[in-house]
Image (cartoon, rainbow, N blue to C red; front, side, top):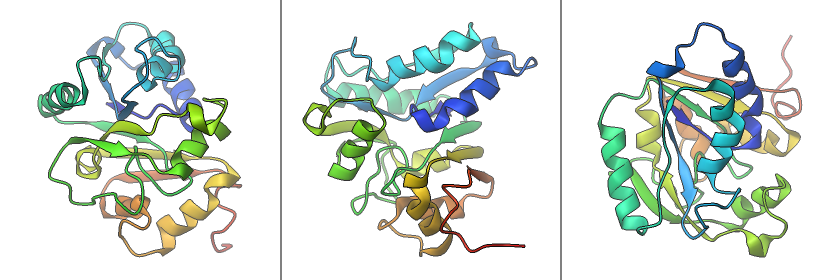
Amino acid sequence: MIAAAAPSQLDVYRALAEEPDIRWEQVTILHMDEYVDLSPAAPQRFGNWLREHLLTRIGDVTFHPMRTEAGPDAAIAEYAALLAEAPIDLVCLGIGVNGHIAFNDPPDAQLDDAKAVRVVHLDEVSRMQQVDDECFATLDDVPTHALTLTIPALLRGSHLVCAVPDARKAEAVRALMEEQVDATWPCTVLRRHPHCEVHVDREAASLLPATA
């Protein structure tokens, strides 16, 4: 399982934690992105976020955080090897305000990236979203670089569950449904996946055409 670390996924993780029949001791969890320059103890690190909001709820599970202490090249090699060890059964992800998935930001996201993990420069919209999500106090506090699973790495999951609440995501949800598939809106690539569920709330769906 690959898990996004974001407030948008809290309801998904609460629901999973309450499922009585999941044998978590048989599950391995990886995550999809991590800041390059934050201290390993920083609460904003996505591995630490997942420990607090998911792992503490489910108990005995194998979790592989992205370890950046030895530098990004070592972290990339280690995580690419972990991803290659076994097929990915489930990806729980969201969509950013700018349409990113993981930290594959427009317009530089590579829909057909040959790598599984790479270092990216975060655009200002992505960084500001971290402030709006109350993960950081100011934009200057948000790191400028991160590791991310690439789009092809995410799409290799057998089943994708994408949860997108919040009115701030309405334009990205509209683009997901209506724009052509390209790096302008990286989320549009989800339409290529044969088993991708997208769950939105009323606010996030507010720009979609009304249906009977």
